Length: 313
Length: 217
Image (tube, rainbow over all chains, first blue to last red):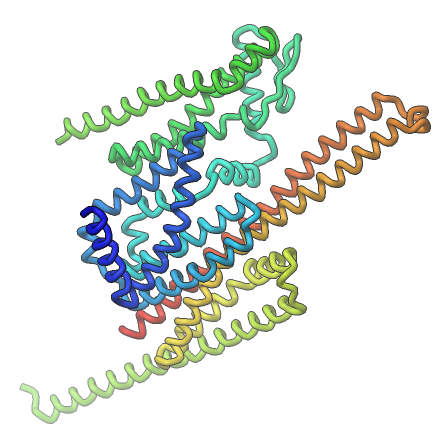
């Protein structure tokens, strides 16, 4: 019985997909994007199982974007695209579908290049589908779902944001700032620490502040998590931006005591304690403290504003 | 009461003035459109000459040529194309067939510009990989020369182990900084090209859409 039902639904979908020229082009684009998404969601799930936070955040972002559009389905059904937008959409979908296999073959051997180029082609095809179905006005009416779905398609956003940061800032600027802040903080508790570039020196030894210790990755994770949280809690745009700024600043500020502790452990307590605080256990302890503080600050912000709103009303 | 002759004379005068002023407006609009056509065509011809000059001799299989071509065409001359297309679209607003063709060409060119971003990203990343590979090869060659100097009796007599260690560390540090520099340079150039391609591509698409819309209007 179930098989028959599935067959019936599949047959109906195929018939609907092949009914008009518009539906044929949309089906072609959707099939191409789905073939990529099946592979991509598998990669994201695997990444999440290996303990990566970005994979889970990306899946949540895509889910949230689709959910927001699904909530607007009644108003979307009433919208139709003008003739010129339909034409533009068809050009985008067909050119994206044509270029997809070329990209796949040309970048097969390089994982990152392949994922990035295919994600861009998928974004073009999806834009074409939106243009031809709802018109260009869709992007200005629904900017948040558009952004969330594009964010979910992006492969390794941490690496891309890192490359952008490194390209447009002075070399090791954040590492040097963290080394200086760590040294200043150590001096306030009576340690004779001196910052020299990316090194924190104590009389008994020195520690290098590398890329992994500068707090950038955590700040980016907090920014994306704040965006998702802000949308999930249905906060206004201003409040969501505030939450993102608080998350990033908190991640960078809480990185200073971590650097202090790691420096102290490296110089005075030996290799075992340095590894403990530097590697996954120490990171998890710091992340849990950071998220707890962040939660109370953000919730206070959300409740204070909403109680003000209730008083006014 | 005014006599009937006087009223009819007034109406006639008003009609005459309105006709003269509307003729003047139409005339100046026509002149403006003619100017736009001339400047638009000139811009497009200049762009075409530049395009051909950069294109020749073509070597699309070479990565550096492709990136250089896109950088020169897009970064330096794409505004000329956009300006020319906009002026020509406005100037030919009375000829519907030409305007439709221009609008469609603008849309197609805009899509080509947007899709070129994919090629630029791929080429930039490949170029970065090649640069890093070259630097690694050169650094390993320098390290092997240091190892040879370390093991040879002449080297052992003239150079101290401390100097060899310092030289090895210097090679490593230099290789790391060169790799970072190459990565930054390629990424910066790539992002500038992609940014220009996206902006000009979207502008051309909007120009085409506007051209098609005003045709209907």
